[in-house]
Amino acid sequence: EIVLTQSPGTLSLSPGERATLSCRASQSVSSSYLAWYQQKPGQAPRLLIYGASSRATGIPDRFSGSGSGTDFTLTISRLEPEDFAVYYCQQYGSSPQDTFGQGTKLEIK
Amino acid sequence: EVQLVQSGAEVKKPGESLKISCKGSGYSFTSYWIGWVRQMPGKGLEWMGIIYPGDSDTRYSPSFQGQVTISADKSISTAYLQWSSLKASDTAMYYCARRATVTNPYDYWGQGTLVTVSS
Image 1: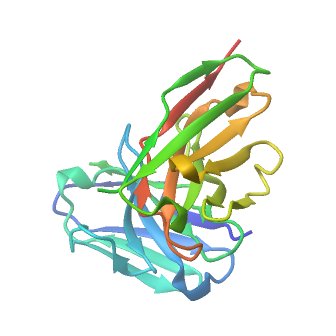
Image 2: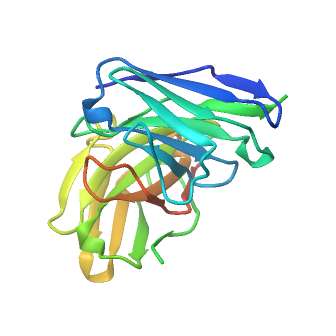
């Protein structure tokens, strides 16, 4: 099983600042099958990034993903008030099971 | 419009059985996988398993194998997650989500079903 470790656990920033979230895998993620999701309180997760760096439909271009192998990053270039949420990475190429990271909470400073 | 609509919240006692549902619409239900994800109170996302309604190919996380059963009825575009004997530790929000292939992410999610197990 591939274990994903996200850091930091909590990130405190102000609107307009840049956010950098990390996701590290215990072994190489096949073909960059790495996704990022955003979850707000009381809502289901929403797909942001797939294939490590491709934005999902309707996702603003302030969100970007990068990385390969075992190290991946989600960057939010200029934080908007609606971006404060919990972010999860997920690897989905290791059949038969997916795994999620434990999440990073992005909170307003 | 693609939608996954889940059944409503449940309150059960330990030892009881339960089956929750996830109805897909707005797309070809038999051409996409449906996965189930658990979120315990205040915790992260845990992948439970997945089913392909087209041929009922089902795969489970080792953590959930034998603890739950995933099924689907393609005639009514509905996937299910069931327990034969609930425990208090099954208290959680359960989400269904669809994906095109096992090497695609989950692009649409249901609204979640809250299951509370308490004596």
